[in-house]
Length: 629
Image 1 (cartoon, helix red, strand yellow):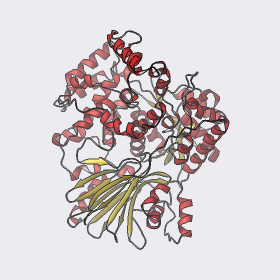
Image 2 (image 1 turned 30 degrees about the vertical axis):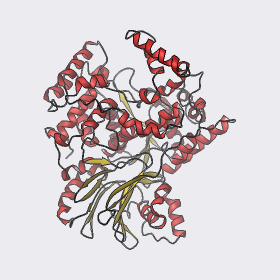
Image 3 (image 1 turned 90 degrees about the vertical axis):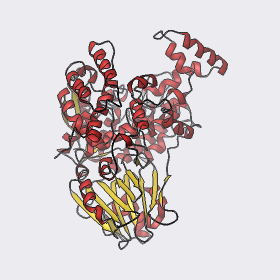
């Protein structure tokens, strides 16, 4: 586990950039405080890393060389099947000088070529420089658990684990702000991949591999998708057998995710996902420690249920109390760690939980990915509820659409008819839906009506055209909400505290089983339950009170706090913002005033803008510097 920063020159010696790269690498110190490495390879390649020691603590410092120095690798992540791959490679003649997973990656590339990446089971982002062929090869894991940013210039290419390490090497200002990404952020609450808010900086996509050749006729960057999720629902004559396969796939994934030379703990909330991970991890380590957040507002804290689960499982829990002042204090620094604005308030309690966990362990297991794999979001039931309309003949639907337009706003049935007569490709664009296009036309000073969320979702829907509506929604979320919000906050908030988070649900073997579940076993027609098959699979694993518990989604009480404790703080951010030429701050002030009076709940809309304003002060105007010392 580390933060990597690599530069490959296409024009001249890279020696002149060594000091600048060293300074930029220091901004990634939180990702790897245990060791720092810098190699200048052949005068035109600089590879740097910050290491958090997890496996082969004593011998796997990076950049790491292999095959008598032909290859040099920087790698961020963990390969959970590295033991098995190492044995297979040794049988084929590979020689190793370390016992860790980093050298397994580069040896696999040497022996099996670019397709070796398909055999890696884990979370990863890496860059390999081949000195003989003078080509860089790298990849990012299938689900996008680990990040990899790139900056391509006329002089060469930079790769980094976080965008902040690339900013010193490119121009920055409003002229380079990606206005399309800003528009998408205000709709989705995150900046969708592969773009960033900086036009020059992009991201390697989840499940993508790349090559970069600095010279020659095929010089430049080339990316290719090596894996994409394939949902293939299969009718089940024996559902119990399916539940058994789900249970055993998850059990084996948890076991292999616990490979580590340092202590491993787990996050525990009130839901079935984290509880299942803890229950299965306890089979490997009965003394596993767990960590959770408690929010100081009635109806928002998951602590009582999490404590009951911990008692049932016989594990020790370490809770952390998060209040409004802690939210306000931490948010600027959290945004610095994020690099890009993410308007999910759950980031803040997750940051504090990770900080608490780091006092005891170096690795923590978590339950991300379960909802996308097993259909855990309530919105996934929408195709079932809309079926009375969506199955009607096209002409009848057109008539009902006209009727819906005539029904006054707020009248019962209007929304149902509107949604039922709207194709799923137009009505569903992920879990996060913030500002509408009409609202953005009032909010954005430079609103562009040609920019739409369909720019993001359209290509994804095209890939999922053969799937049923539920599977289409899952597929869209895998490429939007999961990698844009869920995995960003898991990676950045854990790494901010030098803690490695592992996600056993996001595993090849688990997806292979989950992808076969038919819609009626994910979302039973005569039940309000979500991820039904997973709940049945875990009925004997997690405490009974958790099996059928409704998903809370780690709620935070900003709705309450923005009317009281956070009101003046929010006003100050809006009053002092230098982003007034981009955002109509008065429009947001009116939302805040309306929210405080209790006329409407605008909390998430307000929070979305507050996060952007703070991001702008940190990364553009430079008026705010929340970096740790």
